[in-house]
Length: 220
Image 1 (cartoon, rainbow, N blue to C red):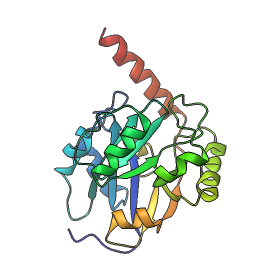
Image 2: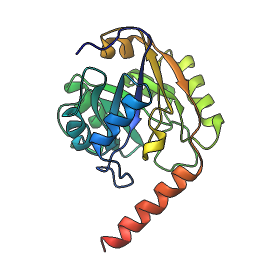
Image 3: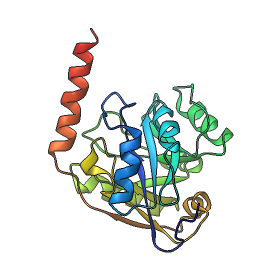
């Protein structure tokens, strides 16, 4: 791929139809990512890499697709990116071990978000197993949760990252990081990134909740 290696923009947290609360086709996500000026997108569906693998088929010289997953663990959600296989465990430490065994990167998404019951609240002792902290998530209803995440990263000398947490087309590219390197994985692991982002409309997370409830009832 001949992606421009200057001021590249990546959204590291998105969901496709393969998430229980998502509906966007992976192919459409890649098209929208290009349209909004992204250089790459990490597809991080809940508990599966199917969306990322499918989106990878539509990768081109404008958009890089990173395969990932947002995994539900017994302590809270963890994102793994640069994955090649499904994560099988639900235990926090084992999930991290599985991600790293694939040479993946461990990200804590929307930490300390008290509105989301799935959020991880990492302690100082968890820091050694974390690669990056999501310090801006467009779907955090209160900015203070992003602020606390940033404080945690700074206090524990951890790298930062950001993502839109997009579940709908109009959210893709709302947040992410700017990178000036053609080695995206190394840039993420070295923390050589600059965060950008804007808050998502409150209607989006509300609609996601309704969609998940509707699908749950439909499956009964």
